[in-house]
Image (tube, rainbow, N blue to C red; front, side):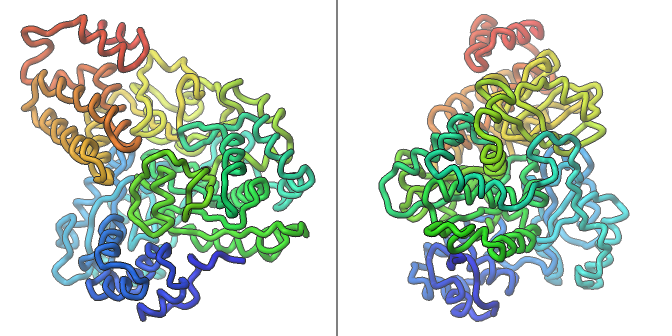
Length: 603
């Protein structure tokens, strides 16, 4: 029983037919707009008006959604819509020079449509290809990796000749998995259905007990206990329950889910099916980030294989009453949709604005139904617990952080790629394995995570020490950590959903203040203002984006202070500077005495 709202029946340029193909359901609005744009190039006022009328929505509602997602265009764009990945790792590999070269060859300004309507070139946030950058997207679905000057020159010629992309060199589109270390989840997948059969043999209550016994914590960053989340959803009032996979891997520097989706899609969908069995859910969604649109056909093929094998659909594995199917919902470029309530809003065809909680999704989620949202890695882990039991899983890692964790390693190292380790592994061990040399800093968990300096490389990856959603970005001594922090500040300013004033205005002010320092016009006062903005956003923003937007700023000021001081007009301390107050601030913001001691060494 394929969920009808996300699987179009027809493909046509007629708006009414496209809308009818999705059952004329308002929650399919984003998918309808994506399909119409793919056919027409952009979303004209007439198109938006037609969609509004066909769905029974106001024009303002449809325009609000179309204007929210950066991969939807309400103004004409080029026949070739080129988006360079703007993550710091791509910049370190020379993406800015390559972008400028392509624009020069095509006679186009970044962010503007060429005069002949042929091409538009711009930047976008991390595309999840940090291990093989610089990278770019063309028309939001075709990736080009391993960019260099030769490829850019040839690309410009192909565009000028209006060559169809199937005629472009196929090696440009190759995406490598780059699995460097496999522990459990990254090994060769087992037979589809084996874990699901083991779960059915246990029964839903016993399977839930194994999940709780495993102490598996969510791999998306927050680390909430998976078994408890499933139990709360199971106990919530309501006749229907929904299982959602968060495959919106938007944290810059993270690409592990891309590899799992390519190589272990059966594991993902099997883990979702186990959750559905425990919960009694009939409907599931995989929310695929827009940057991973190139994986859509592969994932749909795996879903059909599972339906053909009796692993999805009606009476799964012959179990009467176990009816469950999964639809894929493709996002359209919005980092904030990685937050589970914003993701649900997007699934419902709305702007991806995080909800006020409570109620939590396990009580009131998709269309008001109790909903479990877990990420790709978490669902893949569930199948191993079904096969081997909760005690087996809990014996791996640490008592508070059980099992293994997959890391996306990129930056200044000889062997970028994905690495799987048991929780409790030291940072230094990972640096040795990936071939990092002369390392100045490691950004763990993406821009919203922690920036570690060499005196912290003895710390361990674990929820109780260094938590992470999976990004592991390496910077050697040649890198300017101020510029790293400045790049991340622009990322957060760009990705703020704009719902709350502290985040919308605060992230923009931080980016402007960092630009002022970069221009050499800053002073000690600007650093103080940055600290105040951090405190303001940390305590007043609507969701975690604003609260974590200054994490890397705070860490780099405390641990790499000279990178900031060399940009100040008034170096070191101005009259009236209170060192004791500064040290207290360091302790307060980090909760670690050694961070304050480190700051004292700088001063």
